[in-house]
Image (tube, rainbow, N blue to C red; front, top):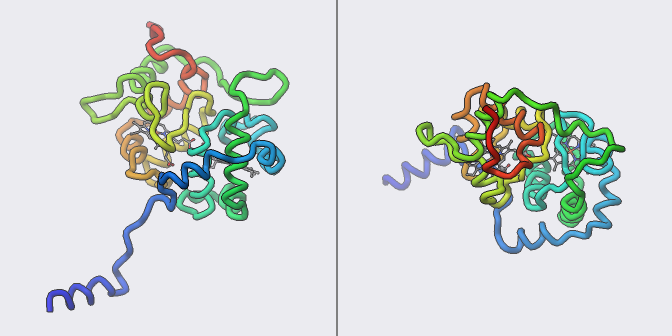
Length: 233
Ligand code: HEC
Ligand code: HEC
């Protein structure tokens, strides 16, 4: 009788299936498929992306992410999430939807081979201008140590260079405005495609000033310096 009541309750029109953050799971076949694309074929498909992401994967607009030297697994997951609208974007979801798994693996291979070093001939906005010492000191503290009292783990334990978590992109050559927008969207839940919610949790524990400081730190290229570099006073 109880079971029957449960069945009735759970099949009623008001019950919602639990929301799944992403259709991607890091199984060995997926990791294999995502990391063995053909970079030359990727280069040809990437012509469609150049207009916004730059000819060498460095965007001329700080709101648009750089793709040069991107981690192929992270690239793969974001493209699948755009296509399934687990990460909904008016711009990227229609771009990603028609691409096959092989196309995405090829693009991942191409962009991950593009160097993150500066080229004076392109129109990249990265790195953005130097930031005030107090702001960079606060960001460096969160990146290297986190804030144990508030339950914030160090960013570098998942995003490198100290540790890497599958699907966590390196942030050290990413644009400031894009980074800030992502941290804001994770903190409000507008972006919710992170498996096990590490980023919704971390971003919502940060203050607005800290989100700005972290975006400005990575966006100005400071994340490329070795961890443990003496902080400015
Ligand atoms: C009209 C401009 C435009 C075009 C064309 C475009 N993109 Fe994007 N792309 C964006 C914007 C804007 C975002 C950020 C979306 C957001 O904030 O959610 C983005 C985000 C991404 C991301 C997420 C990066 C990350 O670090 O999470 C990937 C991957 C990506 N684009 C790949 C591509 C590829 C591959 C193509 C070509 C097949 C392409 N884009 C074409 C504008 C564009
Ligand atoms: C426990 C691991 C973990 C920690 C700690 C962590 N992150 Fe993340 N972060 C991730 C993962 C995993 C993703 C990719 C989420 C997805 O699949 O969309 C991510 C994504 C991001 C993105 C989006 C990047 C992009 O290109 O779209 C930003 C920005 C970011 N993290 C910033 C930070 C900052 C700043 C900190 C420190 C305050 C931090 N993260 C701490 C795991 C972590």
